[in-house]
Length: 174
Image 1 (cartoon, rainbow, N blue to C red):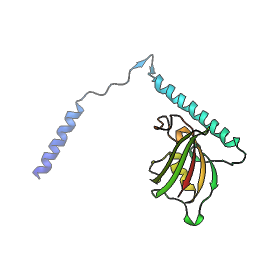
Image 2: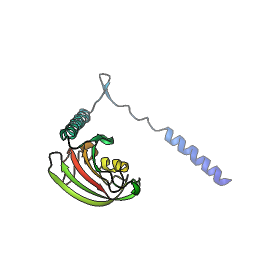
Image 3: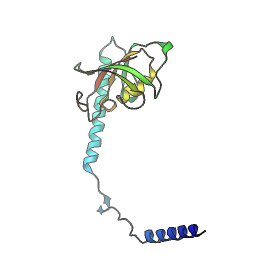
Image 4: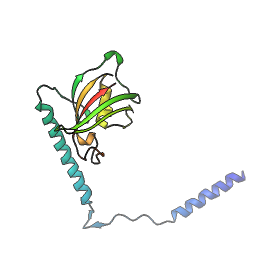
């Protein structure tokens, strides 16, 4: 009983002490308008412009070769299926470990890297466009993907791939 009494007194004391603190200040305003971070606004506009440019470039690349038929998938990715793979083997699933082989190029054909690895799907170990679209294809599938920078390696890039780089990925799902 004494423990409950002590706990109640402690709670009341904490409320009294916390209520005595001053209220936080409101943001300052000039001429009645809130301050705007012009750098952040300009960066957002720049990234939106770059995204639109990437979408136009990928669409032009997808339509430039009549021998390859591309379809627009999620994440702004254009996909040409070279080999649909083995239907009996089924499609990879989320959180499944999957063996993949990726060859990455710029849109003009400059080779960046050849990467063979085991990845857990939907864990963002690979570019998001590959990570999510790979769930659409069977094991054994071979596809060519035209991937915008915002679904690939983004504004950071990697050691081998520059920032804001639209890429072409030849993907083989083992």
